[in-house]
Image (cartoon, rainbow, N blue to C red; front, side):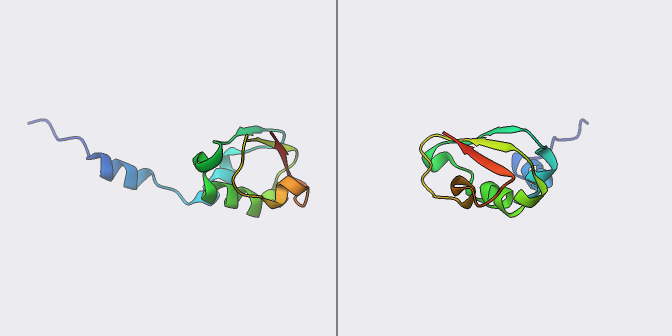
Length: 83
């Protein structure tokens, strides 16, 4: 008898990571494209802002942001907003 594959819920649960894990995938000089308006991944963006001190010259491309973030005003030197 062939074993059943895991359910989608179980597979998603096993692959779930904290939002801070995004910093493991972003390097200096990277360009990030972020969903606009309600498509913005707010917790991921919070984690990027919190870890901005570890980043250099990362450009965040986002049209029509709903939230004003600190990096948009130049407060965080590791991140830069590009509209």
